Image 1: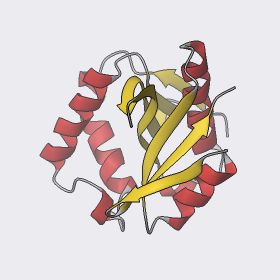
Image 2: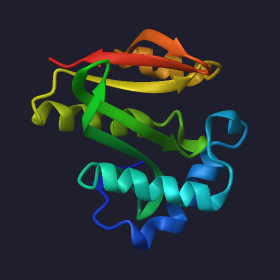
Image 3: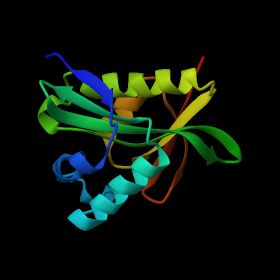
Image 4: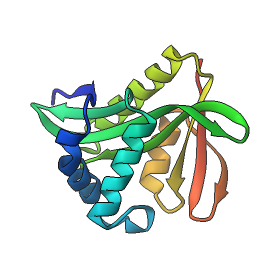
Length: 155
């Protein structure tokens, strides 16, 4: 599998693809996701507005396999740092290194911006995702409702 990670230059041509991808990837985990396509579309537009230069798309032969949004202007707990707002990978490719490549792209992006740390929120019952992030160096830093805060120091 040859995966290419590219920044999304324009949202509009990809909107429907991203909405469909998001809904497909959250099937079975709806408690952590928007369920109505119009809500997902609104969310995609918010994400692109927050991070227009770091909305990364994973492609194989032009076919989207997932995406990640890396926000380098996020304040959490009074500290400015990087935030991964969203990462999705199609279920059949979740063990093929796509997610790892997306996260690595985000971490490199944050390092280039001079940030010292990155965080994200993950669903409390999403054991697979928590294990994935832990493997990549993230550590649990607290929780709020159905969410767990995970953070990773950048060197």
